[in-house]
Image (cartoon, rainbow, N blue to C red; front, side, top):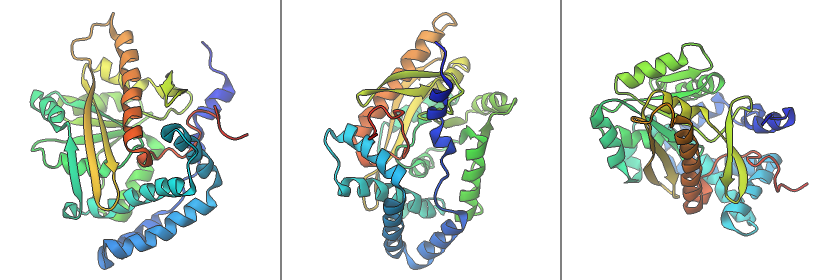
Amino acid sequence: MAIKADELHARAEWARTRERGSVTLLRVMSFISLHLGRQVGRVVLYLIAAYFFAFAPAARRQSRVYLRRVLGREPTAADRFRQVLSFASTIHDRVYLLNDRFDLFDVECEGEHWVQQALHAGQGAFLMGSHLGSFEIIRSVGLRQPGLHVAMAMYEGNARKVNEQLTAINPAARGHIIPLGHMDAMLRIQEALDRGTFMGILADRTLGHEPSLTVPFLGKPAAFPVGPMRAAALMRRPVIFMAGLYRGGNRYHVVFEPLADFSSVSRKERDAAIHAAVVRYAAVLEKYCRTDPYSWFNFYDFWQSADAPQ
């Protein structure tokens, strides 16, 4: 079925929305946090969260739409501020995690054996994440696995922003990122997997011009990109869901859960297997949104105004 131009425009809203904050602000927060401690840094964090909550009306509106769905009731101002504060907290904690201050955090892990199993197979795997929780806390868990190497695949604009942010926090912390959108991107991903590298990718946002599958998500249809699962299927690799859920204070809960294994899927079965994997991804993502609703950080119209206030 043909996709209308206005639908493509709506799907890519997140890519057009200018991110708040700056590299300079990150440097200032890094200095305060590393020199004065996490508690002092969190005082400043509350002020930043309050500013964002007061002066980002579009994000505040879409936060209400999401929370109404996931909580099953009208969210209070306290609910909406808690979500913003959780988002700010995970960004603030990057300062410590990227400087290897893992001792400051209480981290529980669930499903780590799925990663160990794929690691022992030696063929690499896809770690399929989302804008739910913190990726940096997942990195801290990954460092406990000897021989585990993880690269991230992301769109070029995002890759540039992430590297700028990492450099602002810790110049030595630049990650291994493969920018998508280049002719050699899939070749580089294949080479990394063949070396046993795990490929991390966030699969809950579409740019609008890429193939997507519309599936139920928190009670309404939502579009999820097909590309990440198709890449895993073409490269015949297992796919593991990952999320680093923020639970307040210094507590995180990291989860891994199998989504699909394309190792033995035939060409004839591939499309059906990809479809099933995207549906499962959306279902698993919904499950963790319900257990940890304030860890969702997609502050844009995820359902394309399906029930947003007119």
